[in-house]
Amino acid sequence: MSQRNLGILGGNAFKLAIFGSNCSGGLSFTKLPERWEASWENNARLARLAEEAGIECLVPIARWKGFGGATDVNGTSFETITWACGLLAQTRRISIFGTVHVPMIHPVLAAKQMVTADHAGQGRFGLNIVCGFNSDEFQMFGVPKYEHDVRYEQGQEWWDVVRKVWSGAGSADHEGKFYKLSGLQASPGPYAGKNPVMMNAGVSPAGRYFAIRNSDLHFDDLHFSKSGQPESASDRIKETKRLAREIGREIQVWMPVSIVCRPTQREVDDYLRRCV
Image (cartoon, rainbow, N blue to C red; front, side, top):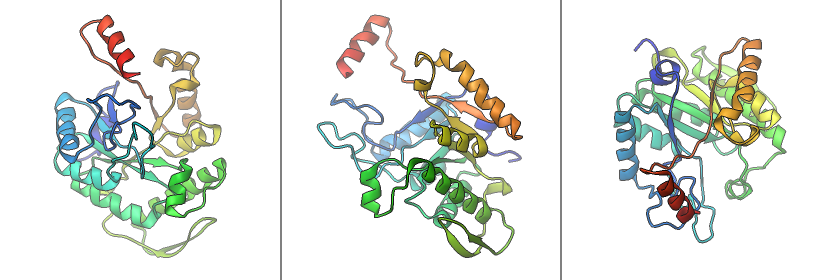
């Protein structure tokens, strides 16, 4: 394989992903009986169906506990890097991402885990970096929750350490604000000597510029467009791409869209009312 993550770095101009299937309910806060059950069997079947349909990737939610309440959305979840590794072993073309909460996972451990998944998938692993926001999960791990922009400072240093581990440059030290590490080294490196594609969903000024500086895919939020509709986000997308090019980078912009498929608009409306 001369190029990694082929469907994402090449392929169709318009790309599609499925988001959140590693967690029960996905993103749907509903008590409908047909809500998504995040069993391993369902995840494996979905990955094979998505690959057959030509969808470019699956992106999981990093979640450690549910939201509680009557629906307890995400109350059942799979850890994302091991989830990705298992699905990559069962597929051949589709890219599978792992989503990592920076404050919860040490960068040296994460770097080794991700390389393992990357080799299992022969270069189809991708990384979604999340700098963390759920206070109850920080408390569960017993780690400090820094102020918003400081979390992106930690994210930058975390990503720098991961790339240093992956570089294959030999033993190196790291003396930073959040990590003080000695003798960093690891083998093997990423598949075929090329780093996995990286996604980030920062939408605040600090988060967005973190993504522009570092990510291959910026997962942006439609709420920052004029109407919340995909077509109204054109100016923001153009600005993101322009800002990336000004620092010598090319970046894709991905956006969340919920799709309900039914034969008629009336059936779509009826089902939405039932869901909500």
